[in-house]
Length: 232
DNA sequence: GCCAACGTTGGC
DNA sequence: GCCAACGTTGGC
Image 1 (spheres, rainbow, N blue to C red):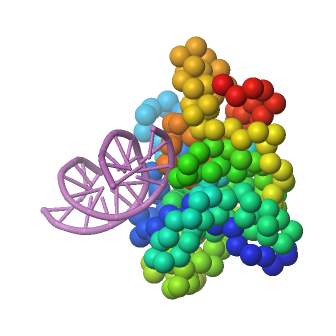
Image 2 (cartoon, protein in one colour):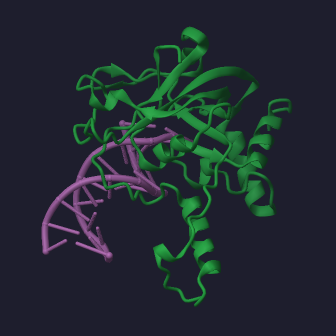
């Protein structure tokens, strides 16, 4: 992989570990495990034994939304700004998505596969929303910034022999034909929640604070289709 | 700049 | 293992 400048994810403060059993980490997968246990448990009891069931297959998501801040904001004297234009400006238009310090978001990054697409979402700014598309070009590997005392996302609790935090490499793919503002997505989400539709359960609204989130292919296609339609 | 939502921590 | 206090996210 080309060595490159950094792209930063949502500059979350380093948190100390609650252990790997993050409350939401792989929630969907856990649901799948539960289902599997139910059906494969001969006694059909509520109680299940972990060693009595076959491991559930990993349910892998294929589409993603990743948040970053396009406007300057200083954290410990360091500017955490990283918008889609910053990614575009890097060599090979590629950067590593470092600085993610949330277990659920980390787990999703570890599920990412090379070639998958992600929306670049602008957060904490004048007009939040989806700016463009990028591609995962390197699967999850250790986020070196957790060991760098000078880095905003330094995590003293993470040990080199058992790193807590990971990142992926992303490459700019293209801008959307138009910026899709959060406000518009929200209106659609509310409509779909009331009457049904692709965005009824979109993580952007059901898990607003999650900085790396999966989309179903229906959600992805729907959002993408908006770029060629008139703004609401 | 406010503050609701919610993830994390730590006391018990 | 509960849950109150705390800290952060991120829209508004």
